Image (cartoon, rainbow, N blue to C red; front, side, top):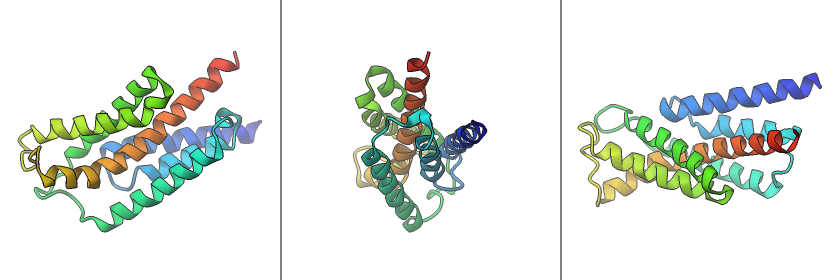
Length: 169
């Protein structure tokens, strides 16, 4: 029982690190989020999650790491303020999607991330991102896709924990 508690606490720590990395991107946030999901999957807390879902999130994390490796660091103005808007909005969208229905977690993160990017493009620091332009699409692919993957994994883990604790009472 003690080892299961250690795995549970480690996975919660990984999910918290991933949440911080959504806002302050020192590293790819999807990697600790996936490690947290993988650790939870080996415990009874998320045992009902199918293998294909865990594997597909692993493939998405590999793609996100590749995107991060290929893109230049920072933004044209030298700031990373867009990550606050995109990261928090994608996490909020995923949580809202979870409240609506479990099938809407990914859609909620996508819409939330797009809304966060749209809000960031309206600030003085993000005015270089024009909404109906190719710059908006490029920034979405470079910054929002990693946030979408990380936020969707985090919210899926929250959903799995909620399901476990609601059914074991």
